[in-house]
Each structure stands twice: as C-alpha cells, then as structure tokens.
Amino acid sequence: MPPVLRTPPPPEHWAAPDCLGRFPFDAARVRADWNQLHAGQPLPLPETDELATAWALYHAGDFAAAAQAGHRIGGAGGAALADQATAIYANYVEPDDERRLALLRQVGERALARHAADPGDVHALYWHAYALGRHAQAVSVARALAQGLGGRLKDTLEQIIEQQPSHADAHFALGAFHAEVIDKVGELVARMTYGVRAERAIELFERGLALHPDSATGRVEYARALMALRGDAASAQVQQLYEAAAAIEPMDARQCLDREVALACMAD
Image (tube, rainbow, N blue to C red; front, top):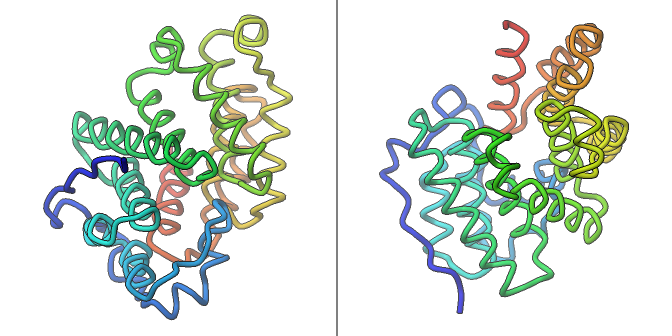
C-alpha cells in the first residue's frame, strides 16, 4: 500500500521569498537542464509533461504548488517531488521551529514508506535520511545520538552511497555526520562508539565535490565540518569555501537559497 500523503499548507506559506520569480521554468527547460539541476542527487527525467511541469514549479521556488502537484500526480514520481519540495521548504524557509520539525517528520515517514515499498528507490531513502538529519540538528545532535538515531542515519547514508556511488549529496551528508558527532562527543568516543573519523569526513567531502564540483551546499557543509573538526586553524580554508559557494551562479531557486546561506555564513 502506498504511503498516505498529507496535504501541504496554504501556498502563501510555501515560497522562497528572496528567490521566487527569478528563475522562470517550464517543462522544456526542466528537461534540458535536468542533469545539471540534479547533479547532486541523480534522478531519472520526468516521464510525463505533467510531472515535468510540476518540477518547473519546484525549480522556480514555488514549493507549495510543486508539493501540491506532486500529491495530485501521485505515484513514485509525484511523491518524490512532493517530499523534496516539502523538505527544502522546511529546511530553508519555514520560520516556525515546531512547524519545521513537523514537516521534516512527515517527509521522513513518507519517504521511508516509499523505500519500504521499493527498496531500489534511492531517492526516497535519501530524503528519509535528509529529514532525519535535519530533524536531529534542530532538536540537538547529542539528543539524537542518545536516542540511537546516529547509527540509523549513518547506516542509511552508507547504504545510499553503496547503491548509488555517484550520489554527491549523500557524501556531503555523511561527511557532515562524521564531523558533527566528533564535535559533540570528541574524536576518541566518536571513533570507538560510532565508527566515525575526522579523516573520513574530509574524504567524503572531497569525493562529493569531485562528483559535483558546482555544489554550493557541499562547500557550505564542508566549511562547517572543518570548523567543527579544526576550529580556528581551518579559518582560511573555511572562508575560501564560503566565498566559492557564494560565487556559484544559481540555476534555480534551491541553488539561490544555497547561495544566500553561503553569504550569511560569510557575514557571521
């Protein structure tokens, strides 16, 4: 039985305000730019014009309309779009903490159900991991580790990389996990208890950037990981990573939001 898809909230609460309207997309442009737009998370081209048009809403930054269209279209393709639009909105735009957590939980549950129905659906597994990881960051990584979520997240991300070695975003997420655990419990405990290592974190980020050299997200997460692992000793490299992320010309609203994050980090 397919997972139950909850109805997203009203459209006025679901847009990328600083990026909306700057990236006009239609089905033809979505198809033409698909590989570049989804370089971090390989995904097959939309099979229908209706689904390609729905993805155009996502790339333009209208996450509500994209999620609603995904729910309406249904099937694996529609559900994939709905979960991605919801997760990105929740992580980047939603101002209310409780609502953000609720949306991430919904995505995590739905994506896990989709993967259970189709174990070969790596996209579903990634968005389950994404929601789990962002939820853990929001409520406290230390608390998430105490609840046993750390091992679950690590295993999930490793499974994604094993099934799809070209998945750059999974490499970035797993690298961030290694760094955050070390930052919270110390390198010795992290290595012995959770099997994470600082050098592995660096390897994962470098591999992710080799797979997706134009990833602003990867650079921002790499910079944050270096600060957690090396502190002020890494400040020059961290600044270079933020500057490189901010210099990447965005192709769509999601990448525009990534750039805004990089600029904010540079200003701190």
